[in-house]
Amino acid sequence: MQTETRPSVQNGDVKTSTPDFKVSPSLETQVIDGLAGLSMHSDAGDDTTDISESLLGLFQDEDGKIMVHKVLAQLKRNGIKPFSDIRLESMMLKLSVDPNGLFIQSEIGVKKYVTKEEFKSAAKDCVFILNQALSSNLVIPDFPAFAKEIKQIYDDLKEVKGGKNADYIPQLSRVNPNYWGISICTIDGQKFSIGDTDVPFCIQSCSKALNYAINVAEHGPDLVHRHLGKEPSGVGFNQIGLDKNGLPHNPMINPGAISCCSVIKKEWSLADRFDYTTEEYKKMAGGEFIGFSNATFLSEKSEADRNFAIGYYLKEHGVFPENTNLHETLDLYFQLCSVEATADSAAVISATLANGGVCPTTKEVCVTADAVRNTLSLMYSCGMYDYSGEWSFEVGLPAKSGVAGSIFIVIPGVMGICAWSPPLDELGNSYKGILFAKKLIEKFSFHQFDTVQGSVKKIDPRLQIRQETREMQINNMLSAASNNDMVLLTRYIEIGVDFNMADYDNRTALHLAVCNGHLNVVKFLLTKGRVTVNPLDRWNSTPLDEAVRYDFADVREYLEKRGGLRGCTLIEQATMQF
Image 1 (cartoon, helix red, strand yellow):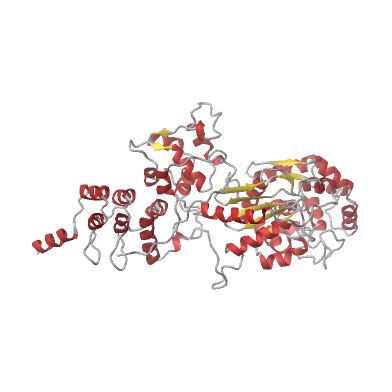
Image 2 (image 1 turned 90 degrees about the horizontal axis):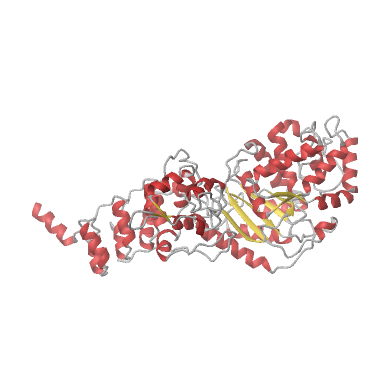
């Protein structure tokens, strides 16, 4: 009998910013192919105190030792970067061949084999993330397939020309217009980067969203919104004007952003206010790169007639808090626009917003969930200059752009993205960044309203395993057994799926594994999955019958050692007993 199986997803040739691992074919057959799936991400299991025995079994050699290089390869494949992820720092130090841990920059500096007890001891501080990552139980379970699609979008746009650098700030006009990078960080800390993602750039107006979030987290929305509004302005980002309440329209345009800066630690000195805010940025970036371009600050300040005019207009209309020093407020505004990030660090900042204000890599609470909600609401409606309405319609995600060519994109509950390309379109947004966002939404169901039933037919890469029906579990389990998908089988063990379930022909996972000659799956099902060795299908065939039929001698030998019998023998025994 032929059983329909789902196609496996092969790992794409995707270049990331961490060193490549050499992965043996045996690992490829154990832990790479597709992940079925599909339940919204859950943090269930945060109290795990030990690493899963079933997971460790996937990475043991014949002597029972843990093959560390295979563990690292699987982490990397699932988007967890073992040599830079702070959550794994303690484990990597203990697994280092160097007692001082000075050379853990690649696989060469890590022990190749350790005992199970040694590995458990090393991993005791990162059990949860290891259990989740090694079983692909992360928000994007099939990360290689997702990364492959992002790489394709990047490649499609790499040679596209359009737009021009911002020229009203001389330093920005001199940036190489060919820079192009995309960086992604999920709420689980999975990372993918391609292109010029480690090149510093000034975040410019992207700072506006962060400053607002910091203010609301500290003071609450009521106080902050005494000095700025919540409505799209309908005019240019640097227009001089107020809303019907005599306030700047929102914090995402210059008047509102300048007013927002007047609230930040207003009793402190300018130097301390700047230090405080940039430290908050660094927390949101998980300690990754945050710098400062003094040249850009001086250049921006020297060309700031319009912003000075806005500042005096706001002062005249009583927008600022009492005793505000206008020149210091404007200096702080220019300085924060001149803060530098990379696409990599900006993606972590965006992911912190996607994760409700908690940094995915450090787990530090950076801003309150309420502040994030308010910030994302305004990014969604006002974050893309005069393109904000079209962006909400076509892309449907909270985002903030800056005139240095970056776009911070937030997919709530899923991931943060930074797309960076300096040339801007006529509305001041990154030309390539806009094209990337459109292609992203064409491919994936990330638009806020793609969840409306029947509205779209796109890929949803998010984890949805806990919403599977019994029938879906049976189909996916049989497909996994057929395709040697050890990752999905292991995940099913973790959530307690019954591996003795059968389809309408009474075919079990063991039948399918034997039919395809997957001895490792057969061993796994019998030792870890607790399946019976002699299930009968509708044709009274056992797994041993299939091993004989397809001439898999090694599988046949193993089944016989485990008590496997032919179907005719079972029927004969049953008849004799009767």
